[in-house]
Image (cartoon, rainbow, N blue to C red; front, top):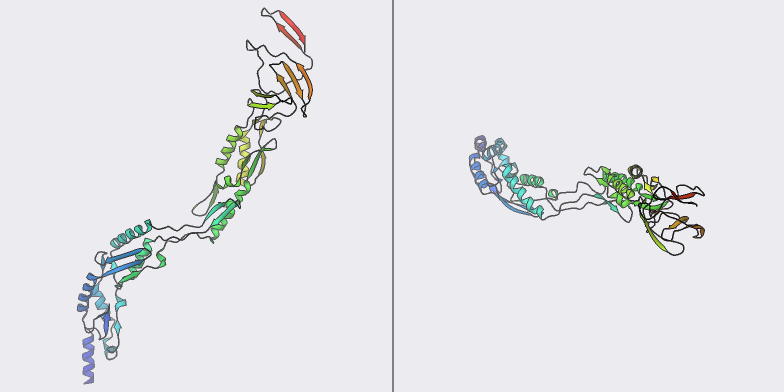
Length: 393
């Protein structure tokens, strides 16, 4: 009798689930796979789930998301995992087969829904900010600015958590911190530290440009820092071109030949003259080449502007670039005076300048002394070519 009961039990449980068997909190004890299949199809049709966390709050329906469930295969598989020969023991055990459910989504429908929801959240959020380099005015060097955490979401990670969280019909998917976008570069990144060191090598290229030993132009560290660029891959580059162009333009403007000069004579009288051949003529191209070489090598210091023609001193705010020893020629008074470094008159004399008509007038301006011939003879002629006068000067 016992044997008959045993084999009857084996036969019954070859096609039905053991007592105390459940799935999704539903009792399927004694059901056939077909009955479980029909029940699961009903569950799928009514299944909705929530997605919550980090600004998202969605309620989605499985049918709208293209969720599918091969309920027949699942039911058959669940039954095949049972051992009907052990029914005398198994009928007294609890069996929850929920974890054996596997659902799938039609990816496009769910992905599009998740992407739209994430975009809406991100539009109001703050994206993370990578650690970066910034020039510190106080330290006059590049320093590392720490990364900043944000609250924007990664749509692909959200989609992955939703997909995995609903394979067994969970009513809610609680998003973890893994869905948050993270800075890709942090302040302790060795590559960022290396970039800082490389960027700061260019700071050693700060330059002072002089004319006759007087500073007339400077390229400071801040100006250099503006031309240092750090790419997304943390490679550092430096473009000296804008600074070199600036130097060339400014040096070109430092030529003083023919410039207007205002000066005060030792006797207190002020004069303004323009013209002449005296003054500085810069070689801006040669100067620019020196500047470029120094900047790119990070070797700063002082560079004397290369000249094609020199004057005595760098021009002051009034344009004066001749020394304190000079000859002042007063065309109005027809008188010339040589002043020494202390403003004393070393020599003076009346003069005869060019006739202020017929293009023979003596031009104003600042000039070099071309020759020193000592005594000379000044001769004048009449319009008919005959001699008018001859005077030793």
